[in-house]
Image 1: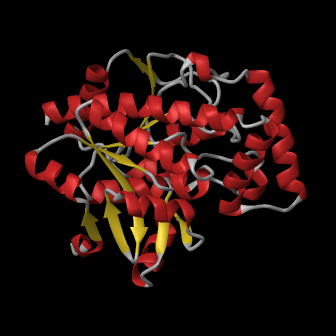
Image 2: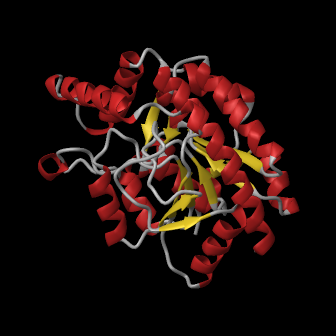
Length: 306
């Protein structure tokens, strides 16, 4: 295996690996494509600091100059936040971006791959991708789901993005044997809201319990990820009927403009932000921070078991 030549670790992450500290992976599409400047930089730094405060080390992942960066400097975060040369990088894009020495902001799928290569077991994000609405005709299914089916990284998120067909997303994950675990909840959260019409497979009430489950899965050599669904804090959640109507309007506009493929999610998130007068961005920032706290706790507990 010659993948190590493509990896570059930040000094902080390298020291964590050498000393055996818990490490938490973070994606970079939230910096380049998920939030406007300067909130993208501010949120990234705050999330990293939350992880450090919980006793773990953050490793924000991106492709810069044809290298997989495991942990970013402040200058690299600023570059990702403002450059127009950064492509959205999923599984299919990694070989091209690396070979052509380009830049890429990693999606959930690509971050899982890179985290796994770097030996990182826990990854914190906002929400996972999934089966898009009307996928029975468009076949628009996020690569995140296939990655969850095969890559051994636990993903802490606020559930599936509410722009998706959540029912079909859960069916896909069930088919591939991916556990969907609620952190202190029986109900699957839907990103901006704490609830949805769907239940999780299992509920855990502590980071210790979650770490023990991940360790058991690893001991059994059951390949694939785990979805750890952590609801947005109550004070930051949006009202379910309100966000549903906003999403319906955004979906209709995307369809009218013929937007498809990996352009769909950034368009919808931008349109939802516009239609909610920025409330969705505030909610997005709050849920990512909440996920960072929980994810770091799980990583620390899992590190003690290992």
